[in-house]
Length: 176
Picture 1 (cartoon, rainbow, N blue to C red):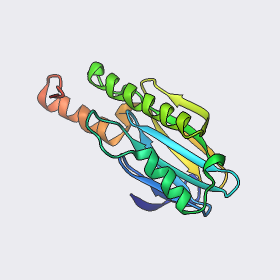
Picture 2 (cartoon, rainbow, N blue to C red):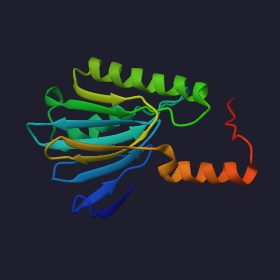
Picture 3 (cartoon, one colour):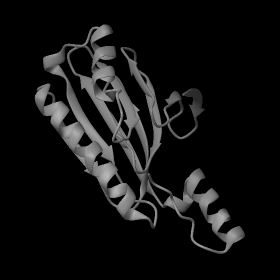
Picture 4 (spheres, rainbow, N blue to C red):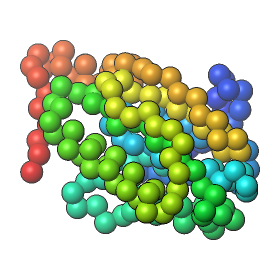
């Protein structure tokens, strides 16, 4: 996580990476680049408190990312029964689709089940596809801007393309 000045939005922004989250009761801008992960954006319209995280659920994960996000928002004064959610991400970006489809599906199911059980309404979703997304979230208004981008335009995608050129064969991902 780091803070930067976003020239496009003309505002200080907090960037979160996979496994991170940020909540604010002030008018902040949260930024992320998401591919396979899911970004959960929660908002309390009464307290104008917003939060965002980015994650994938593995088979043996013990940490509950949405529970941590909700708990941090409640600590800032959010009202649980006022919370609303937006879910974004879950793209298949690489050739080795079968390995990731199960993990992404598990993560999406986890998100929807958790939010349903917590009585948090899902206002919108933009899940799936084959493109990464650049996301901007305004914590005081629940406004979300997103731009679809090709995987090759992301830092990891560019690195993978360079590896493929150097090794001149397909990159394989090992699983247990």
